Image (tube, rainbow, N blue to C red; front, side, top):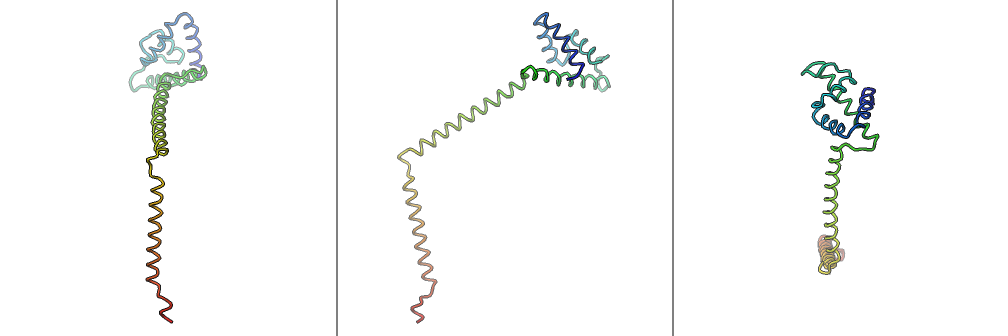
Length: 158
């Protein structure tokens, strides 16, 4: 974590002890792209060494983007340190979990159906095997007959 983030965050936590509203303001400030709450924006600029508001396609815009990116990285590292997951990551994981639960339920239903088919007396597994064995025997007999016809009889040659 960078020094500016720690200074900013330390001062903010001291101020946050004065009221829950400040935490709500911080969340709204971040969601609004670091704008809307002048006191937070002034404090942010002060700790990140930003003198001017960002102007399009300027060095101040690049400095502002770098500061915001650094803040986000440090904020996420702080949340991770505290054992907290950002809401967007939580929601993505929740969606993935729900999708996997649905997939598991579908697979369990398929397994249940397949198991019931295997135990059903109406299945013709034994009959299917018998038909297959008969087919193999017929093909074997036909091959043997073909081979007899193709092989000259040795008795006739004598």
